[in-house]
Image 1 (tube, helix red, strand yellow):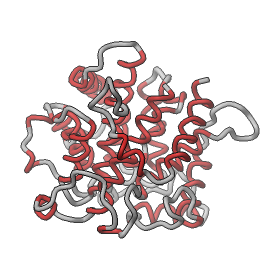
Image 2 (spheres, helix red, strand yellow):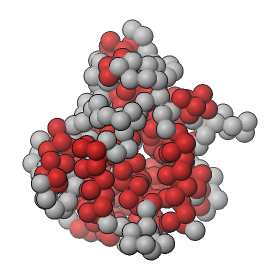
Image 3 (cartoon, helix red, strand yellow):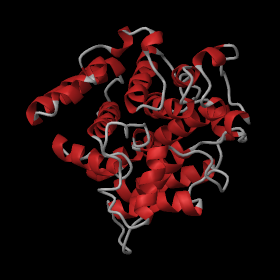
Length: 335
């Protein structure tokens, strides 16, 4: 499990860093000079290997789950501590790559301001339909490695946990449900590894559809909202043509794009490069795709030519600190 944590964390950080230099550029513009490797400067004028707010907030979440509270040696889920880390990131530059926040979404900004003023984390996130950016989806992955989620048998309780953590910044059902679909998919991929089964992403995808559709029937969610997820849950996302795959900052676009990029391609590099070259919200599409692909393909080696390229890992900012965070998270949740 320790290696899988590293695969996941470096997976999303590398995908994020590949996308940072071309964020906000259109698909057509990027197509003139497609991203094939790590770049520097660009949109945010950042050095090569720099990750954005996506990874920063994921690391803030992981830091809380990896840090024993009240001098215990056990993993403790504390939503107030998670929220406090988000505040520290925005105002005190905690878990920033270079000591400053250079990118942040509107909904996340508003929620963190409310947190700083004393609002409860359970009430801070936006609730209206227009508060469905990808700001909670981009940072949710570390929660998978909290033992209270990974080893929880109740789907309902896992959903409730995801809902709480998403709601710190994004409380609308659409955002919460997107996070849940994403984490459940990665959970299924991890279970294949733990059971020493042959990793099969198509089988995992089918299991996900069955699990989520049964869950929806059991709890009778809003049918209009659930129908928005039909392309992932009722169809095979790979049947859709690229021009129908959107890559804006809308949470459903990011979820669909990440599934499409991962399911359509056969290596980490192919998946994340396609994600970034879709344009627009390139860092987040790369980050979310990179999380899934990192878990599935791992890190490149002599026996694994489909994993995360080591030359990309070498330039990732604060890679030693990220590695230490992975070790801490493993020690507290799995030892």
